[in-house]
Image (cartoon, rainbow, N blue to C red):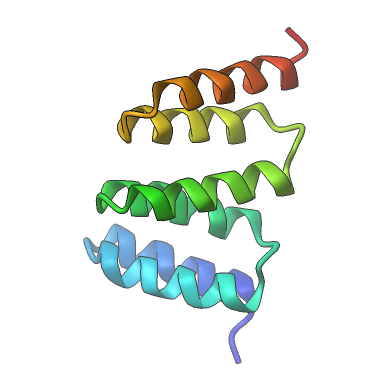
Amino acid sequence: MPTPSEMYDAAIQLKNSGDLPGAVAKLEELAAMAPEHSDTRAALAVYLQRLGKFEEAIEHAKKVCELLPNDPFSYTQLSVIYVKCGKIPEAEEAKARAHMAQGR
């Protein structure tokens, strides 16, 4: 059985070869096995957003923020996904949380 790192690397290879749906499938499999793997959740948020699956992307981005509550980038990523979904108030709130995490 492959390790989470090996599965993540395989998903990134799929994405790099142009198979974004395949990468998402591999990452979803990994997320089911290792739900606390923040890199997997972050990649899923980005890739699902690119595929137009905004609500799913938001859920993964929120999970990253739960896993890494002091990481400003996590909130920035969530903010960007909210903007792309047209959820501006939520985007502004996430942006404010990113600034708070940076100590501003």
